Length: 185
Image (tube, rainbow, N blue to C red; front, side, top):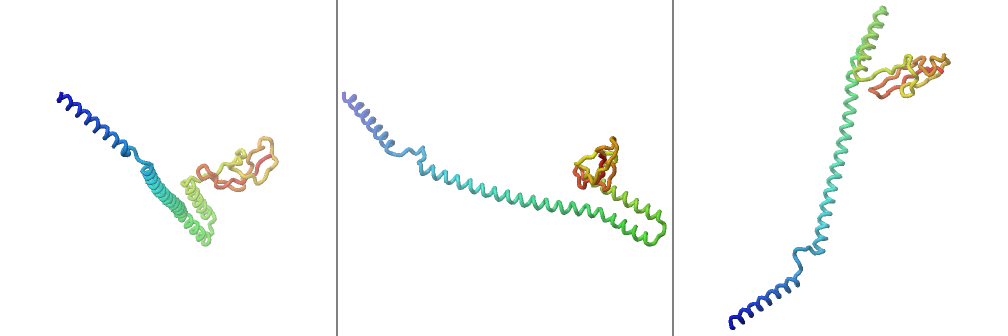
């Protein structure tokens, strides 16, 4: 019997120890779940991190915008420079032609020189994708032509270009100068 009593006492003692441990754990706050203060601190830390990231992204975008605007401006300046540099030989040709006109009486030679300069200039325009707008026997098109006046014409010439008073030009597909025309009505 003593042995049974001892075992019972040990069981009761173990039971009491387990109950004390359960009560202690219940009294202590759980460490697995964060408290409201900890959650608030974490959220504020995350907000500060995101605000910093947002500020850096805005600064980076502002720098990108400034850089691309500067590059566009430089590109426009250098593109214009290239065209004017290519035009300088034409200016030289005109100056030589004027000098020859003052010294010669051969009008045919001067006329031929001017025609060569014109061909060279038209070649320059073609090289830079500048083309004249077609007006001869063309239908009047407000996207390319500007009617200077109308002229009474036969039924076959109604709505057609009769005469061109100033050539128009396109740069690629964009009209850079409308052709000034007389339209039949």
